[in-house]
Figure 1 (cartoon, rainbow, N blue to C red):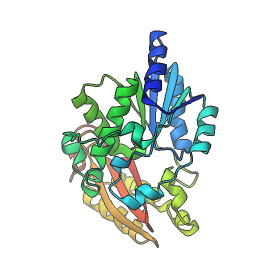
Figure 2: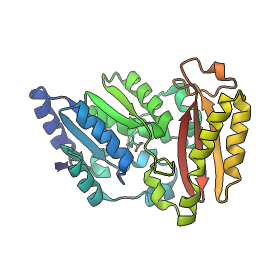
Figure 3: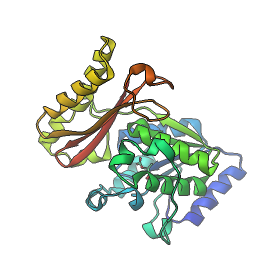
Length: 282
Ligand code: PAF
């Protein structure tokens, strides 16, 4: 595996690969890699001749300075994992390399970006669109891989790709979970032992909510059950729980209102100071 720090070098490597008719898969990450990321890499490895993984903690998508400063950075361990996973190029640029000047682009991301994370974290999705569009531009991959834990983010990235005219196959990959059900996340390392012990309550409540739907309960009843169940757990507080259409991301008030397929329940929970997100397909 080669570690690349500059955009010029990255472009050069990718154009060499494409000149040899190789397909290129991109896995954008912010590092602090875990088995969830590695499942994206594995999928990219299976689908493409050349795999590029970017490791970049993108400052423009953080609307909370403390979150940016405390975001785990584990470059050496990340490189060891990527090497072992058979990655060709790890792109690990500096902030100055990616943003030699401030990125002032404002993306018209529309309604998919206005609800849930979009409402709670103003500017977050614009920052995601900025960095992912830059990476798409630099690599112009055949395929790009994103985890479904950030379910709304995938919809936002599809929208960005559509408005920017990127002809890239955006591949969504299932959530990876710990044995006790907690969705894998780079933020999990910030949980104290007692928080880590209670955090699986999120997935458990979502599964129980799904079972309630199957017994005929309404959207409102399932929402109330999930929120009340998690809020009853020590150190946990639900920020939002919405049941949404899987394409438009708009909350539904009746199950049948999810016209683009099975609705998805998207949740954000504070476990102490750590913000955890998860979702379930109903
Ligand atoms: O999901 C993430 O880790 C980030 O939002 C992404 C897509 C790598 C952009 O910085």
